[in-house]
Image (cartoon, rainbow, N blue to C red):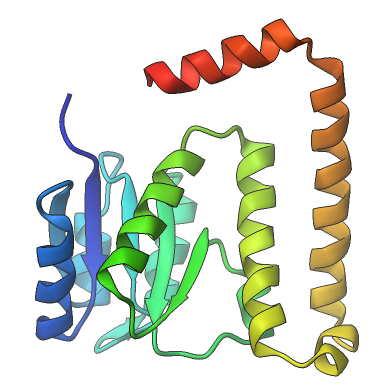
Length: 187
């Protein structure tokens, strides 16, 4: 079995090389410096995309839109110096990392994203929403969060998903759980 594939989309060559150095012993790493290169390189074989939001010929948001519209089943981490704002709620990424990012944090993020690839759609959505909530909770004062409709919708959707997941968990027998986690371990 081949190593998981990671596409690093980063316009700063030194940062891209640093990330590649962190990752190349464990992953098959490709680099893209522009929106156009990223869109050209991403395909159904890419497992994880580490995506900068600011690129010289466009936005990482455009690459993210392309990935989701094309239906590629890869996990995406925004790795950027752009401070998160409420606009992230409607974006289709799985994890948001604010630069600078250490080697251990980058490796942990990829491990998290690869584990999420094993989850079904409901769990993936809940994990992505929980990540967005955590970023906004860390970066925005409570008064701003409480007065934001998009944030309120995010919390409401996450609570609904949590209830659905709890209900699903209650309907499974312990044999079902053992089989599910055994199958995950064999992946």
